[in-house]
Image 1 (cartoon, one colour):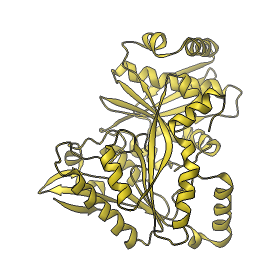
Image 2 (cartoon, rainbow, N blue to C red; image 1 turned 30 degrees about the vertical axis):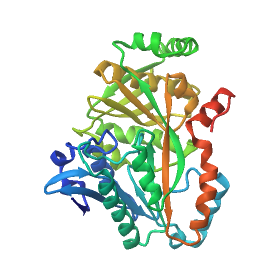
Image 3 (cartoon, helix red, strand yellow; image 1 turned 90 degrees about the horizontal axis):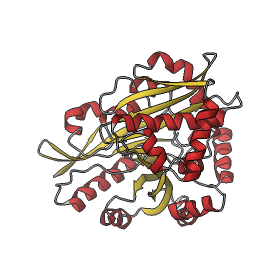
Image 4 (tube, rainbow, N blue to C red; image 1 turned 90 degrees about the vertical axis):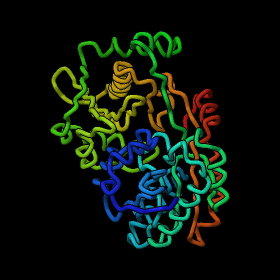
Length: 379
C-alpha cells in the first residue's frame, strides 16, 4: 500500500475511478469539469492510495490564494480581509489547501470498503496533505465538509493528526423514493408544505413553463448571468463556477447532467437549474434566478419542485440540495445532516485563531440550525 499524487484526473482515468464509492461529488465527470475550469492560480492534486495497480482511495486537494476559505466566518472579518487584499495586493492573500470537492453537497474521502487497514490508508493520505501544503507554502489546510456518516474512528484520526474539527454548514437531503410526484406531495410533505406546493403550481399556471435540456451548451450564455445573480446574493459565497464548468459538464457520462430552464409566457428565460445524477442519487447543484421580475420566489420554488420531479421520474431515491436556504428547502421535505470541517494552520498568526473559529462555527450544527428555524430564524 502506497500513496501517489497525480496532477490530472485523466492520468487516473474513468475506469479506475469508477471502482471507488465516489458518490456524485467525487465522480470522474465532476472532478474533470472542475479541473478544466480552474481559475486564477488555483491548482489541483489528486492523492491516491494504491495497492499494485488497484486504486484504494482518492481525495482531490485544491491549492491557491483565491480560495474562499473564510466563507463561514463573521462578515466583518470577511470584509476586513477582502479590503486588505484589495488594498495591498494578492501577495497578502492567504494561501490555502482544500481537501475534498470545492462544490460538495456531501463531503467524503472515497475509499474501497474492503480496505482492511483504513487507518494506515488515511495516514498515508494525511501525510500527502501535509507534504503538498508545505511544497506549495500553504498557510491553512482544510479538509472540507466531511459528512456525519463518515466513520467516527476516521474522524478521530484526522483530529489526532493535528487538525481542529469544527462544524460546517449542514447539507440537505430529500427522500425521493416515491412512485410518483403526487405520492411525494402526499407523503413527503407536511400539510402546510402540500398547501404551499399547490399554491405555487396554481400561481404558475399560464405564466411559466419548465423543461429539461441534456445538450445545454448553447444555453449557457443565456443563463449564466442568472447563476451569477444568485451567487452574489448568497449569504455564504463559496466558489463561483465559471461558464467553462457548465460547458465541461455537458455530455458527462459519470455523472450525467441536465439543465432545467424556466421560461415566462413571452419566452424570457427567468430561471435555470443545473442537475447532476446517477442511478442512486441526484444533486440540484446550481440555481439561477432573474431577480428583475417580481416572481423570483415563485421561480425558485418551481425549479426545486421540477428537480424533485426529475429524480422521482428516474427512480432516484436520494436528492441533495446543498448547504443553504434552509427555510424553503425544509418546506420541500429536506432533512439536515451535520457536516464537519477540519483545519490545520501552518502560519503562526493563524494557528491561535483556530479555537475561536471552532467556537464561532458551533452555530452551524444541524441541531442549532433546526432550533433557529423553529423560532423563525435562519442562519
